[in-house]
Amino acid sequence: MNTFGFFSLGLIGGSIALAIKQINPHAKIIAYARRQETLDEALAAGAIDEGTTEIDNRFHDCDMIFLCAPVAVNNRFLEQLKPIISEKTIITDVGSVKGSIHETVERLGLTTNFIGGHPMTGSEKTGFANANPLILENAYYILTPTEDVPKDAVAEYYSLVKKTGAIPLILKHKEHDYVTAAISHVPHLVAAALANLVHDHDSEECTMKLIAAGGFKDITRIASSSPDMWESICMSNTENIADLLDDYIRSLQDISTAVRAKQSGYTYDLFKASKEYRDSFADAPKGPIKKIYACYIDIPDEAGSLAAIATLLAKADISIKNIGIVNNREFEEGVLRVEFYEEAALAEAVSLLQSLSYAVYQRK
Image (tube, rainbow, N blue to C red; front, side):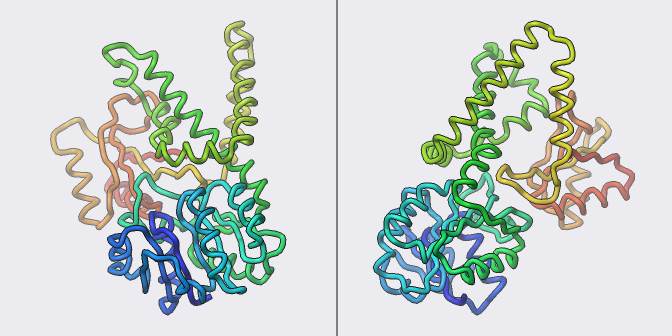
């Protein structure tokens, strides 16, 4: 594959385009975007070779086209692309729900041209300005090919994903939607509900918010995700989400009954089973809920201690995403929390600080 088309160049689309350019600098990339400013930015960054605000025959010769807009918009793109693409063109998407687009592909008779895609990564930041090919590294990238698409096209896409540093995995699209509902969509709803629970029960002085510790912040972190995006996901994967939520609600009701009755051993078994399962998770790959790269450092309670750490890391060219004192240490290992953009930066920082006799801690 040497010619690629991109429809929408946000965080994910831009990151994939940049990754393809790194793998194959001679690849030709043509992009469509609604805003000329986005195309100009991508051209200046070397992510694309040609940009357009029109959907026309210049996409006919593309070997592969990435649809990187919300699901409903991607479905409209498919309708516009059907009379334009060649027989050899493979179309893919980057959506986190696959049912709707596969239904559209079936309806339009594009099953020989489509392989669904879902790079399970992202950032709290959006737009091409934040695109970075590194966000694909060690991320699961799920492919959902149709029954009719050529096997060699699937193999070529699989190979491309591996070259970006991501981890390709092939699933049926219905299985994909059920799995992601369980490990991504329902957890986002749970986090949002828990954050709102505390908000609704807090005092006028906001005492709960003031002393919220690491455990609460960890479990509700994903409640900060985009309301627009998650509304769209919930409306697209409704049956799977609702079924799993019903099971989760029943489990919470069982827990509530056992706790109210002070049922001896129930919560111990609950925590023991969940700990064993959680501890069995592989640590390296990124899933749909993005991993945080952070460490905790014991520092003396005196002026200049935080600045000293920041200066040491800056001199070593280690970029810091966030740094701050932990006021409530109920679940924290150190008083200073430092967060990094990448796993390699975290490892380098830990090694440097430990070599200078700082007590540094990491969480699983």
